[in-house]
Image 1 (cartoon, rainbow, N blue to C red):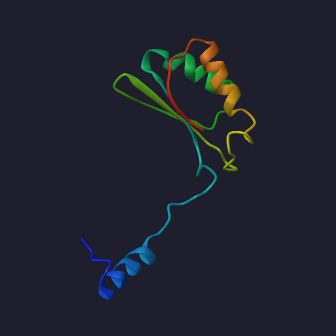
Image 2 (image 1 turned 135 degrees about the vertical axis):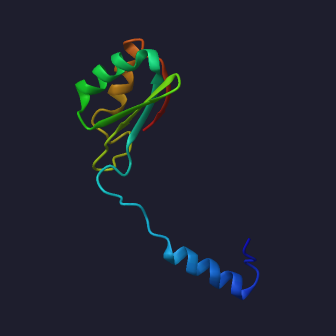
Length: 101
C-alpha cells in the first residue's frame, strides 16, 4: 500500500496514474447491457435483432447477457431505441434481470 501522506507516496501515485492507459473508447464505449433469464434467450435475441444487428450474446449459468453497441455513446433519453427495446422485451414476457442503459 502506498502512503499518500508522504511526498514519495504521492509521486508514486502520480506516476502510476499517468501510466494508466484508458481502454479503446471506440464506438461501443457505452454499450447497452441487458441480462435476461437463459430460458428467454431465444425470444430476447429475436427481439434485439429487430432493433439492431450490433449485439453480442453470452450465457453463463441461468442468465444470458446482451451487449448492444451504442456507437455514439448516447444517454438513454437520447438513444433512438433503448427504451423501446426494454418495453418490447417486457411486453413479450421476457424476464429482464438487469439493464444498464
